[in-house]
Image 1 (cartoon, rainbow, N blue to C red):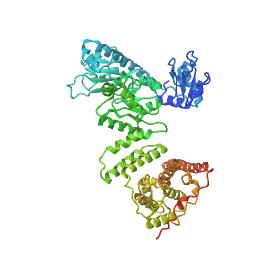
Image 2: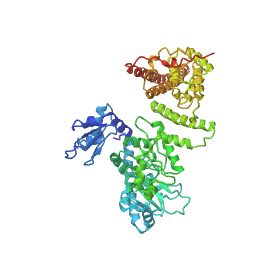
Image 3: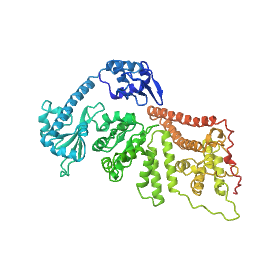
Image 4: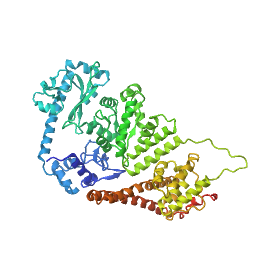
Length: 625
């Protein structure tokens, strides 16, 4: 019976590890984890931990480690399938029926693993043979000690085209080709894939050899790739494999850190310098699956790519892959190495402490995104700056999680506003004239605002956002782009937001004093729903609530239009239209829930004096028409 990795992952996700462990072992809560005296060896001081978030248990005393299935087999003594069936019964899952094709594929993978293990033994012997002298000299030039050479299993692939075939004669030619060790070309004799190269085995998380990375030794071969990896095979998938994960995973449980470097040799150099928790992708940008592997181990893997332009582009490609997948608590940190240096250079020139210092203070994903885009193109003209703003917005639109998308958008636009609208020289007020206590609108702007707000009086959300922006004018330019988009589509209240944006452009950047509301400005009829209009509310929390209200206001027309379009398609394509309508109705329910949460936050602050919406009374300055 073959069980897919996806099915097993679902099983692990459905049954809480701590609830199973607690049936036989007394656990005590320790922060976000559990601790106990290890059930696998005698001890008086607890060193056994259980993490439901990460899905594994670990003993720092005896090294016992595993997931919920391993617990059932090692602690309960069950056979693997018996453990799976018992857990599946608890999870309400049906164990898949035996699949002959899957069974044959599993058998094929097992036999191909025999091929790669045998190839590794051959390469290791060849490294110690006279023909491996060049490879040994290269390893010595890198300064790797005997322990590092042994641990990473370096070998040498001889230059002869049939050397591996002769050494692995017990395997059929078809198996050698299927395992990626030989290349078959039409009408030609197959030949060894790796020739005259230093080899490194690639392992799966269980420590089995599934492929190889091979480095060229002859610098004169300009047309040959410097590094060559095994092709994708039933054993090896470069997009789903991280080099050194089988060693770095256990190390990361002690450091609570995972370092991602660009190449396999960088990974070896890091381990040789004492950084055991380093992995590398397989010559490509980090994939979604590789990010998932990393996030199962740590919340914020650290990218430590080379300090040259290529390294920074690789970091940005990884960030681009990560943005849609960001989730609460799951992000990336980024270390920028000195220009022209890779991890090995830094460690050798400045010592491991230099790398440790960088790793101790990595940059956030958001800050890296901002710095990269700000430096990506000249910013001399307004058009250049508008391009920067557009690129930042495009990045935020890639984020799927709505709260994270909203927060990224707000923080990046705050950085943009501070950069694009630097503080102006403070104006000196002539003797005998008092500086206005609060900013105010021009008479023409006040008239337009009052008229637009009156036309949209029935729209409580739009009215509340207008009132909130008058109260917190430093937020207008932060939300200018989505509000402008909304204004173009809404003829009732759109002019009010256009007026506010025009007014904000004339204010000093960072101006936080409320704008005096125009005479006769009517507050929204249901203003008590909105926490950001509460008198005495925490300013930071109020601004966050206002940002959420802007997000809802801008999202609403598109949602309503999509619902109307789906309904209109019922006659021509009822099945697709119904499915689309149901999907959109779920979004509408989520929208209403978010809007309701704003009201509940306001209710939570009801102990404070009731809202007076003083923005409408913040200034008595009468405007002339």
